[in-house]
Length: 416
Image (cartoon, rainbow, N blue to C red; front, top):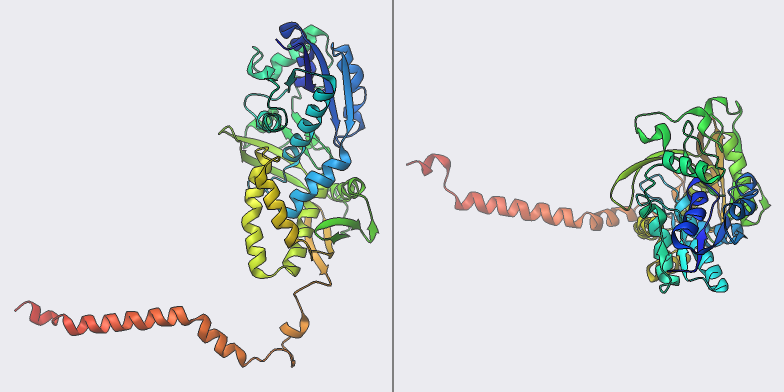
């Protein structure tokens, strides 16, 4: 039996009731690790005191915002990774980082077990435990949702009340949320019906598009080697840059995603995500790549992107596969430097400008006017070679058809 368990702790419903449950069922000391990944002060305010009041021996609150954006969000952005055509991987990117820090603290305090509050139906259990298996294969993992007799969030609320643990969730408004600097996810409640529209008061980061400003706003995003570095000409550190874009895009109702996604465990689930700043960054980064990368490199990168997305979604961050993809992406990003201008208006976003010293677009080559760098007569030879396979196929088909006519008797003679 473990004597000291380190628990990944958020202060939400699931992890709040795990502290007393672990102490009762394992007779063990519990140390909590809460990660600040930009979910906001309100969510973390009093989290340590809450953990201690629930029976934890200690609660470490770790500021991981800079590392989260710099080492997890931006590499995923540079890869162009998008899961299920829409999801910008806000929760997925955070879990390997949180689990890594949890392992580091477990080693420091001499823990002999790790625990998390992920349910047995979700993806996060996989993401945490794949990281644990990679970084701490010797430590057993306790996952209460796979052991206890609590079967619903309603049961969890009743248990919390019985143990005197305060939680924000209620049976009337029972969304399961995950927040960080990159996004805010919403699951549960009426969203479990994929045909039920999200309620207006559910959204917290983005304005209702119908109530957004009546005047469009342009925002200029600058990149260096594929990494966003400035907003409207002002250089900003990673955390401030994302927060700034969240505010701008959120004001205009940009960044809402309603998705029925494929979970790793085999089922489909419905979630609504708010990723305002991330939506702008993905659009701008993609547009800059389109301006700079050659056709074949862009196509190769588009093959890598969904594989990278699957890797992140499945929690396989600490793998050779990810390192290899990053090496490829890094080479493709060497010239991705420039600016993209986006126009935001009532939930919509359009690209209105892009500029780079590395742009492969050159007016001298595409102009319909007279030029001295492109000989239009050269196109005839190019087209002849480009069409050669089709030409050869057509010639062969005509030769075979002619030979067949010479060999086969005419239809009227065949009946004699």
